[in-house]
Picture 1 (cartoon, one colour):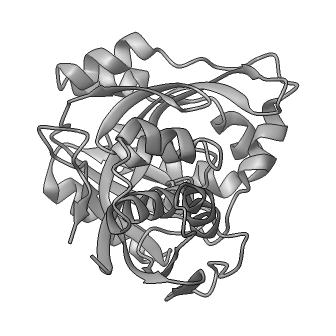
Picture 2 (tube, rainbow, N blue to C red):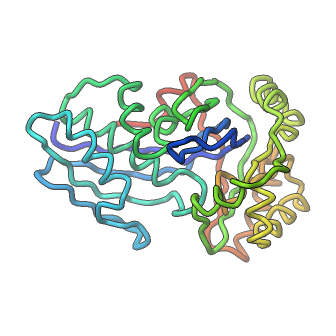
Length: 294
């Protein structure tokens, strides 16, 4: 195999808590993530050097790109040190709290493993990925899962939430490091109710799900970026059954129990913002097989 295309989804954090900071400066977290039907498409080919092209000018093409780092790291297991070139067709917004960069890194590990026939297991790919980005292990699995540690301890769960997702990203990004810095010295963190969240997921109970939708970053990021609060409040006025910022922001997603309500919200937000999606959660009987290899 010389060439492969991978379709890999974005994620949202349904519940996100920061458990503490580690000596290596990583943070231990507890989060429930779910893939959504917004995808990047990456085409990989065998190459003697890493070459990255992309349809989005915001994406770096050099060694700072997570894809570059992942290819470099996994190539250490290839005695011939062969590399990959990649074209990234970005649909997932950049610096949005949706795991787009990590998804691309996950795709690079999957592609390298497949093209060069390393025959690594998913767990082995995750061990490589966690050195580079905390969300990469989950995005190698995709689907839905409870993640702990720095994100590498994954317990897959198999819900499919039968509702629509409207997502809006304002015209700015939020640095993950900036968001962590905001809460490192905080003592008044609002903790997610993971029992309500998990019950809501597993029973498809929208009311319990809404109760569990808490992101520990939100109060701190909203204070610095009041436009995010404006977006949340507008979704609530448009009859969302649950609204939350994803990851370190600034994207906000809202859950709707009918297509007509979701469509109305989408139409209202697209009048004001360029980056708005009407989508839903990935549906799969096996949460470990949600990406597609071609």
